[in-house]
Image (tube, helix red, strand yellow):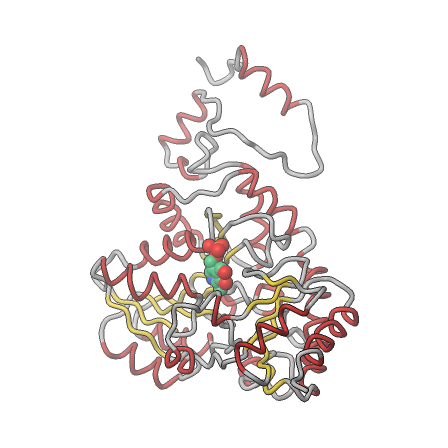
Length: 398
Ligand SMILES: Cc1ncc(COP(=O)(O)O)c(C=O)c1O
């Protein structure tokens, strides 16, 4: 068929349908494959195989639409979607650790499955992994200097204890050693910080969370310069963790309200954190927007002024049994793992994201007994806060 030959048969119907419409939102291109013609063959042969639409594991227009929005939010040249946050993390690390420096220095305070990847799966592939306290710059410097390192890995704002990594400082350390800094910015979100702007080389997100924002999709994204993104995309294609177009559409739709959702949820989180600080049954509150936040100087350096994000962690008097009792008295926030949706979600790290850690490991990671993690949604702030106070008051031993 020549380049100008129109498609025939069933393909003609599909092409005609698309051509006649001008949708306001990106259509869900729920098509595994795309019509080939001489132009497409030529593009593929000339190296366009990763960007042209010919097979949806490589590229798909709806998936591209979501990626483009996230690249813009992160102020990046390029982004690529993956089937989950873990696919984004694993694909990125397995790409960047393929050279002769098969070593990663990572923060100890990371999401539970990321930790399993680091302590179990990467070493099984012969990759050396050293873990350090995310907020101890001397420890980062010593570990990076210890041996040739390809990747330095941290969460901008850690899960669940909300430690803030000094990304600018560890970017300098990483670059001086010829390593790339990879940052999981799921908790911080582009609403509060753009890691690439302060020196990170690659940003990964669980787009399941704040980016999509409605707890209805599992997705991930890798954001970087075009060359690095393309390298990682090549591995995504062979490892197979591509995003489904319908899931990509849900991410795209959630992104349309990203700023308003985050503005509202951050305001609520700040109000909740302030009120919890005053509550006699709460022994500590962690929130980047509080004047007493432990990493305040770093927050002022990295985060946008007045934006602490939507996550709050606090510890209730009486340890884990009390925390469970409080959680179960809540009527507005839902007890569920995950975060970043329009509904407030609450979980206790000890029996969910960090259940596999020993007591010593929990302590080393500053996860206190009785800690609860709140992901603030867009409900009325006062109703939510009153509900939390009622749950706290209702569990006081007589
Ligand atoms: C900080 C962080 N990174 C990565 C992930 C993994 O994301 P996903 O569940 O989309 O694979 C999560 C999931 O909770 C997370 O909290």
